[in-house]
Amino acid sequence: MLLYALGLATYASGIETIWKSRQSGLEEEERKMQGVDVQDYARQLFEAHGDKAVAEAAQKARALEEQGKNEEAKTWRLIEAAVKEMLGPHQS
Image (tube, rainbow, N blue to C red):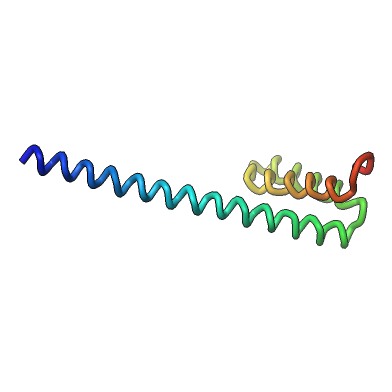
């Protein structure tokens, strides 16, 4: 019976490891997709607002931070950084 219990524990541990590995892979894929989305949205924002796009993204991020929506604000900070990158040095 003890061997059976140990076998079940090992099996459960193996399933948990596989699950975590798949979750980690999904999270990495989501981060890559978010990066693509951020770049795409930054480009669209820049096309619509020109050099004012940085200020637009910063204002949106600040408003979300004040509302306690930190994850959304973090995305807007990434968009802000991407627009700054598009503008190049000394343009932000």
